[in-house]
Image (cartoon, rainbow, N blue to C red; front, top):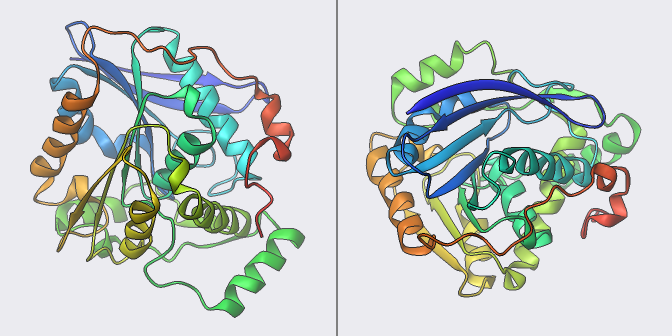
Length: 306
């Protein structure tokens, strides 16, 4: 297994820090990570090792405003902007292996983004795995607070607030919780713009689940204290046969960091083994989509949702 770190710079001169794990043998496919709120790719080394040991390249970029990447902490300007970021990262990642299958693997906020991307731009990926997606929060803010947030998002979109996350809600492994508390790359912030974006596009994917064209694995636990299991269940019930849903009972938010993580990762690897064609290249588009999309919110279906 080889490990490398590098930086990618997009057309607006924003830098993205990327970690990459590569198997020694010819890869079966390439997995690109979309991490959660206030998170970074360095916290997914265990998952990377599991996927790489089964023959997959694992690419873990820090998203805009997170980790070692550029941008204001915890802030996205628009759905179009973050969709364009994902397209850019996928396009750059494909350059080294343009003909292999591409899988979006995602956690929490990244889970929402991955599902959105799969629904909006199915030609750009082959498979998707979404773990504990933030479609809704387990404890939804009151209607009044959501209304205030929507007003602030128009007046002061980059206003930063505490994200309210508690490390003890992530998983049952206290060592991981302590490491999270002491991680200098965890910023504990979310802008009112990011909050309203994730809320609105989360509702959009629930309503549009039946249009799913990309084979997708969804994992979530009923005991998740952060993101809503019921919202994932509603998405699964609305979806078509492209979706495989694996529910858990007692695990917390970060399934990949629970004491049962070997079993969880094993399920993901097993699903890929059953679905990723062996010895066949993808027929989907393998070219980078122009970043001009980030300048045109109307180009992203559902971006104007209130």
